[in-house]
Image (cartoon, rainbow, N blue to C red):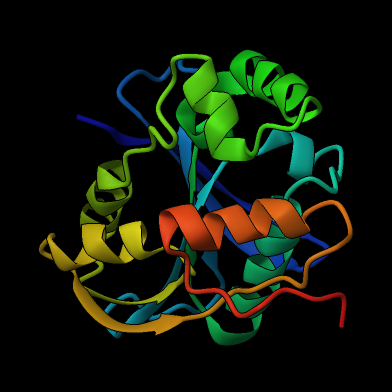
Length: 199
């Protein structure tokens, strides 16, 4: 059972947020996080983003994915409109950074993101968004507007005790490197994406 281990206000370039660490163990170095915008009314439908960790995209600004840009866009949106980002420590669709780099190596040989995972004997996507539902329950959030393009996240909410009030698209334009990755998201995972371009 995860619970709040620590919380504090953190000023960022997008604004100040209440950052709350959730874990079973207070000594956990990689807790899940809730990032709450100032003046968010948790009793009303809350703008929520489930975001899985991506060190390559968020820290090193990799062009292979749009994860860092999505996190920035979500932080900007919830700062302006109120809301919560549930930051899940599920690197590389929960295969970890070592396996992710192995998959990247296979992608250099022509595999797409799904084929590379399967070639390594790993699931295409091993994330569990049930943790996000648990965090929403702990925050006593009952109804949300979900910032996502991912039908699996929508399904997790619909099958939970949380009311899905609406879905808010969070699409980042493709670049010359990420276009194939985003197309695979659309074709294999059924993500709600328009045709990608550089405009």
